[in-house]
Length: 216
Ligand SMILES: CC(C)(COP(=O)(O)OP(=O)(O)OC[C@H]1O[C@@H](n2cnc3c(N)ncnc32)[C@H](O)[C@@H]1OP(=O)(O)O)[C@@H](O)C(=O)NCCC(=O)NCCS
Image 1 (spheres, helix red, strand yellow):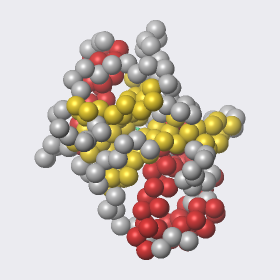
Image 2 (cartoon, rainbow, N blue to C red):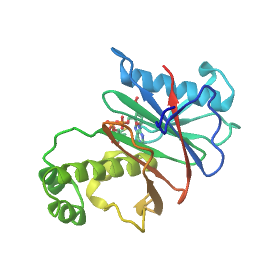
Image 3 (cartoon, rainbow, N blue to C red):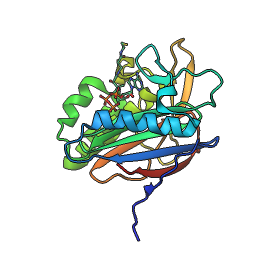
Image 4 (spheres, protein in one colour):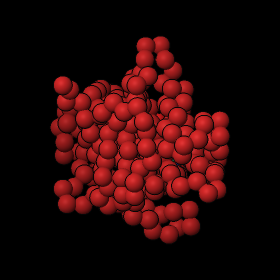
């Protein structure tokens, strides 16, 4: 009996509407996590689409976000993120962004926040003490990356253009798409991953998250 919320699964399936599948990939010793995460993503996509990995056709958005280029295929979007020992892949029928950071990463939180973050976030971090501030910074960082990866812009969008302080009653953040139209995205916390901080962003307000463990 295990209390790991990420359930080992052999047969990936296409996420239903409103569902997001979060796969955790534990790194094998000496494995290149970046290569492994890419390979697993392709296997997951192929299984969801019932095709072989060499039949997958991918393209990239203007800022490098990979996407399917298979006319007639069911709607399927994904995003991956890797830390040193673990990677996560999120799959959904709508756009999705995910980010994972090493929880033990040492950062000069206030200095970085003052340089890159929104003024409300700087003020919020300034009120935190000691290690709480470092963890709050990392939490904000993963939330920002998840949002910008969902949008497909990456960090070049500008981390200071929006605030995403965790709030009990509101997980919505309004950003702008490439045509400067407002886009509402929602932040969610996937099940915890030991030693990591993880955030997920999606246009779905209340998705059903399913957590799976990839067997390497
Ligand atoms: C995307 C980005 C936020 C990734 O940050 P990171 O913390 O280093 O890496 P992560 O492990 O979290 O995510 C990497 C994955 O995100 C995906 N990705 C790449 N570009 C992306 C984008 N613009 N939006 C969303 N996801 C993206 C890829 O699958 C990538 O995997 P890969 O490294 O195997 O190719 C960062 O690299 C970035 O800002 N890229 C945009 C660069 C850009 O604007 N280029 C414009 C010129 S084309």
